[in-house]
Length: 58
Image (cartoon, rainbow, N blue to C red; front, side):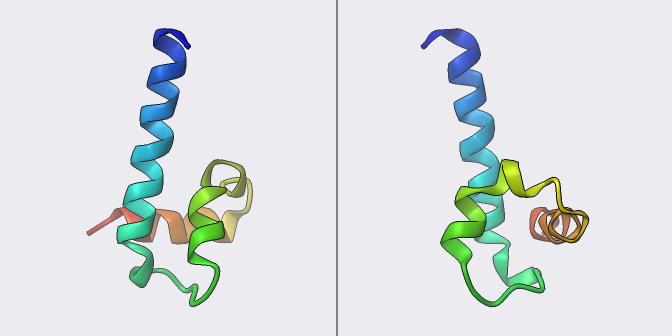
């Protein structure tokens, strides 16, 4: 996997964990698992990006 793959996995897991634990601060009420699992792809959406930032702040 290499060092780069390992670092990408750490970033993905860290972002997913932060979003999962801060989910209650977002405007979302459903699809917690899907939104957490797909967070890198969902960052394209401006509204998701705003909610992601809300979830990270704590």
